[in-house]
Length: 157
Image (tube, rainbow, N blue to C red; front, side, top):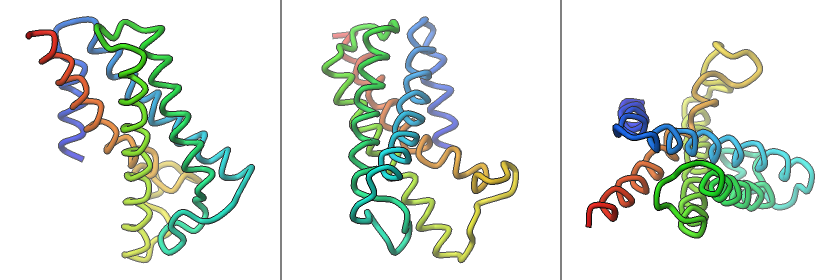
């Protein structure tokens, strides 16, 4: 949890108004990806993504989550002040962040199965615990921070 916390602070605190929009991007992409993966997977079902560790996740949900992450990032780049981040580059960043979000979710599911627990905590009843709310976001933060760093470096050259 340490590195993602440091990176979200770094994203926000760049001394310019764009820091807030990059922070918003993390939340929007992670939430859109999570929500659409669930809705598409529940609606269409299909083959399981990784049944050993996460028996309810499907390939259709995975694809829906990726599409939602791409669209969410493109929307952020279009409507928010993201500096020189174009909609095209935002689509690529959204795809990578959505992949990271789902990787974090699968990592947390594998971790719970490994230790034989159903929920990662009881702070948020019915949602599997606090870790279930931030698992994917912890991974997406890293991707978005790298994207922000690349944009900052490109601005300086």
